[in-house]
Length: 443
Image (cartoon, rainbow, N blue to C red; front, side):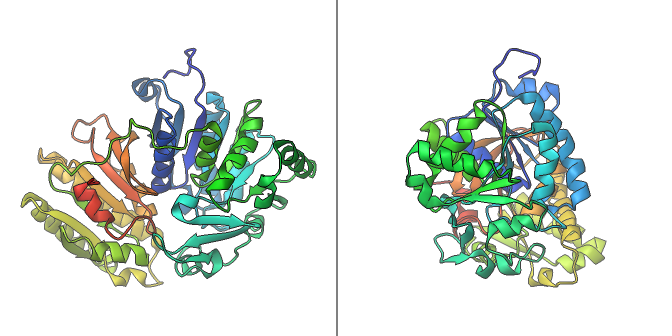
């Protein structure tokens, strides 16, 4: 897809602030019937041409783990590229729990940086994603704890209220965003979606007359999505709209367009062809439950403190994993409880574990026995590991669970091209998600 041809612009362009969330939006767009591809950075012209015509173009990044200056540097070229696409909707995809802070993953910085190029007349912030248990009611964010778990207000969520980097201490997303530099945040609350389209339009226009920095849009359940999508698309048909939020942004647009069923072109994930390597770096209780339920794997513990301090520990872990894979076993490498120590640098941990994952995958490839399927649990680790693998793009292979995508890698290296990856956040997926990575979804 050359930008110099007469191809129509894609309907959607999105940037994911971590790789796991970016792949969820990839799957959401594919389920909506959009020809979609996720690039691992601003794409080169030759990779755009290899991709062919696309309805949705994504860029996977790591802005969620960056300070404001690094975020601005990351997003400047993204903004220029998105402006050149002329897509009706540009989506800044943040985590569905909005875990961010003034000093890291600052959503206000992202909006200001991208909007210098997009010049969106207004910035809708979509506050929920019902299919994974995220709801926004009267601007208050709620989230389920685990799959089909109890729903908590975000500041009382057992995991998010004590997140090691960005603890969520404020449930009102207006206040949460104001702390990140969006001083005037207006809100559309869900009872208004029951009004006529004209009344909804008038309510939005009254808010926009106040010139807010953003408009927070409730999503109390799937029934709200068509109205949210209509309000965004109404203006996007005239000029590009910068929308912020989880994959609920794309779900809302698809609901308005009428594309709410899984596209038939998506295959049901099949059993793996050969041994599977998985790494669980997330410290969430949900991931701990998933590791315990992974009965098909040979499990190898990783002491993160030793990984940071003893170079030999990485080599020992890599040797243990490779020995298991060479024996035809599925292997799950997982962090131990020592990783919860507050004195450990979370970014250093993510970088070191990402290096280790890339090392294992690369060693198998160099031996002429490339892995065909891997999985990584943990947002920052996923982002850093995949960046080091030599992959330039991902397409959607299938969906293992809501919020858990099985992607197919595109690479200039034959040993990596076609590699299947599951990248998931710590709270995503049912207890048996690692088993699904091995066996697929069986009827």
